[in-house]
Length: 624
Image: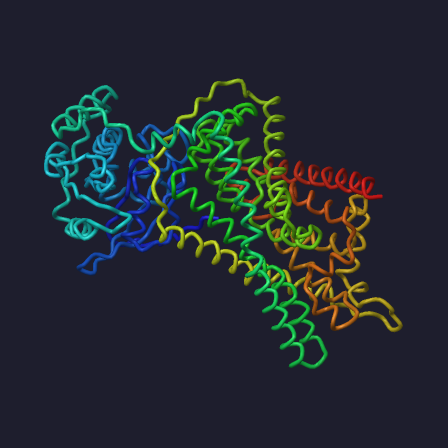
């Protein structure tokens, strides 16, 4: 999940970065402010404006906004509307920028210059950052900066944001307010044809009016975008990704589990029997430690996703899937929000603001939770590790990775089926041609990948140390009090508030094979899915009748106490499991009411129950 830190600094000039998608605007923002906002290589990654502080050499602090990428100031989607509102002074609670930094992709001036002309007509002082100058030079595109500055009537600074080149010159220009050009007099709304004529004249003056030669990316795309080989390559890449999640993560996962077990033994041996020992060993260590063990799988998954983002492959995947998504009433533009939902449904739902068609945007929001988010991965990894043997099939495929791939595929198929059903009841018979820029391929930047992985680890650890720890402690309290009565033969948890709740829920979930421990774990799982693992760890630790059993890892415990149909049923449940409360809150914000989140929660619960019921009954029959 992508998170952005918003810095509020009411004093001082306000600067705004504006540019086309994929022009390197966000990379420039990161360099200027030191922000750790994620940099991606496809259109639509920035769906909200981000603010940071820019420190000049003279020690001045300037406010800098990173506005969503846009091709024009005629908004076609919610994210483009954000940019237009800020530049026009219509943004709620924000003043109009004092200066606009127009970021140009030096490899594609023909398209980028039209936005500069539109920004000039807003009557705001402008400067130009001519970015990606190194890529342009490697393609034989040599731009005379002085001539471009004279033609536009604006200061132009040559930059290479990914390497930090030209930033000192840009900072020097920004800190000297007297060098900012005077606000132009808005000449009114010019026609597209007039803008294009002026762009052509500028390009001719620069000697860049001839058609650019074919790029190496074009040759690669002949294979990557081939109607037969392209989808096969995409399927192979996704399959290998899920294979790596298990095969690469096994060793670090064992190290974390061993460390958690060692810590539990040390703390348990150092404390006398009593509530404090139970709280720390059975509550905190058994519960939170059960979730920590799955950090390697999450980081490996995101490592591969970041590689695909950084290389420029993801827009190609959207293009390849456009026909498939069109068959269910969507377009390939829905692919990127859905892909973001594999990290977390919340940024995926927010990314739908880049979809111009209101019907497509709503349907994408409703099916985004069916993408297998990273919070499900610990549950999948626990059950697969406990019930699926670790062995190779068909020569070299890892069976556990194959099962994980099937689970992710089931979520995708479920989403497509829901979209197809919605197509029957909505105005889906419109032609929605996909228009999306395909950036040039390039080697991923190690810095951006490292930042993305650090962000993912930070988000996960904050959840472990925040809401997961809090709910684990709350569950321990419910599972500990009241204590067992005199003469009780079973574990004390059976007589606790949690035990009573679990016994009551067991009647609801018994038809799909869930025992009272699983039923109880689903309740805190509404806050965050991975809490289900923490809850199971706490419940089974408190249910143990001996210290040896309590010290065991969770995986062998459930392997001994659950049937195989129960494990399959729980996997099917989590493919369609009702969303966490934070996701439902995000849907409420994006749709403007409670109707859509209530519909989402209801249909997901029905799907999850139906899938688990069929899975449990069929697997019980086959294994009888």
